[in-house]
Amino acid sequence: MNGTTLRLALLGNPNCGKTALFNQLTGSRQKVANYAGVTVERKEGRLVSPSGRTYTVLDLPGAYSLNPASLDEAITRDLCRGFYPGEPAPDVLVCVVDATNLRLHLRFVLEVRQMGKPMVVALNLSDVAARRGIAIDREALARELGVPVVETVAVRRNGARPLVELIDRFADAPQPPAVQLPEDADLHAETRRLLAATVSMPRRTAQVDDALDRWLLHPVFGLLTLAVVMFLIFQAVYAWAAPVMDAIDAGTSALGEWVTTHMEEGPLASLLADGIIAGLGGVIVFLPQILILFAFILALEESGYLPRAAFLLDRIMAAAGLSGRSFIPLLSSFACAIPGIMATRSIQDPRDRLATILVAPLMTCSARLPVYTLLIGAFIPARQVWGGLNLQGLVLFGLYMAGILSALAVSWVMKKWRHDKGEHPLLLELPSYRLPHPRDVLIGLWERAVIFLKRVGGIIFALTVLLWVLLSFPAPPADATLPAIDYSLAGRIGHALAVVFAPLGFNWQICIALIPGLAAREVAVSSLATVYALSAADDEAAAQALTPLISDGWSLATGLALLAWYIYAPQCIATWAAIRRETGSWKTMALAAGYLFALAYLASLLTYQVAVRLGAG
Image 1 (cartoon, rainbow, N blue to C red):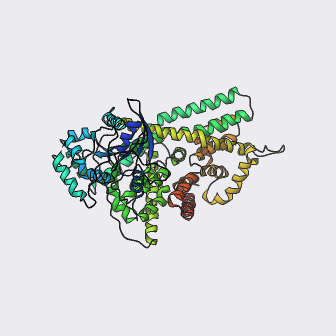
Image 2: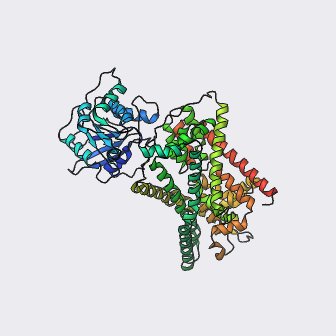
Image 3: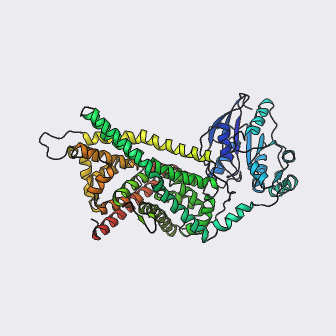
């Protein structure tokens, strides 16, 4: 042992509740999810036990075996053996198992025991196992395994206390290494023997799981259910967020007017009212919609439904050159393409992983939502159609579907070009259904709100101020006849770019907004707000909301073309960096950026030209 501070490593199969147990032990605010492969990197926290001892706790990636078939399993193996660069070997291995699924999880316990290290087995979800009538003789199991076994309930307050008390006993009296099985031992046979000797199980699966799966995994009704769920989510994003968004918009407008009224006219007042307040307020107003979208995604993760959605979509995705396992990284990309790209580490096949990385930016990330909401609000009337459906929600749903269908089309083209055209079967564990825990959903929402607001307070704030400087300087000459913004650095850049984007219907103000959008897509909204605030003819116009300004100043064809642009354009340098880091290839990064820009330009060009010919110009 390492003195008085032990290093504990939590490891186990995906879906065993390991990350929830980590949160219980350390108070960490890591996201808890109920699907395989969510923990793709090692996490660390500190545990302070009631006795006052401090422990270092590692949350290792989920693994089915220590003979790695994927990157996450390789990380777990190397960390446990002390081979991971810069990481000492853990002192105690805490093998977390799902007490309702010991048939699968015990084999991994036996494999971990083969390493001959001090270890503990934590029977998580023991309360669920008891409700299902599964009787586990814990003392007999500990005797057969030769290691301590404790029951835990990771989602219950103090549900990890028995484990903490056991760890304290390890610190007082270090335990010997676990007894190893012979090298040629049949782990499957040993698992069956342990189950027969220590576990009484009335049935292999829960009745409620079987009943739900008959409908949710049906090839027709299951897909219809998934489509309805996704459709309702996007309807709710508009309907539920509207009152809060109106309140935020009114508050920022009032604050801008107060600054204009109470401060002497000059550069500082312009920076505060036209730059900071107009720019940041134009982004913060979309926080309610983003949180509603995340709340649904987190609830679906927690419920155990997402792996079933992956199973349902496997055949469709296989036809496009992907696999059902790609569904989870692509769904994560709806929040942000960066964690979605990182989540591809759980895809074992290199071909499928590369294809998923290349199409992940086509998923409609949350940074696009402010732009979509702005343009939909400006050009799509807020009315009910088809018996009460929200037209704006329908358009938003259509934009998300356009991204999904485009991703499938691009992956299908890549499949036709590659040499290996074989199909790789999907192997995925379906966890038991469970009700989402409100604490974990709220923690996830808090994390995303903090991340979003940090972006607003950090990079978006900096870019808003920088853009204001570019828009305000140099000052116009004494004999100027145009608005001052036309003589600024940003105005000159925008007018130069407008030549390239004129076939798309983009004016110079849009071209200016596209530049800082390379750092973060949502900056385009604050950039437009700043541009129009500074180019307004008078103070009254500057105080107006951005939506009526662009709806009056742009044609419908321009608005539709910009919506098409944002379906494809990879305007996020951080996403490019993630592709480079995960593939180790500058060429792949350049390919991703190049094809997405080409698609964006072509889609916008076609949209604008067709809309003009239909009379929307």
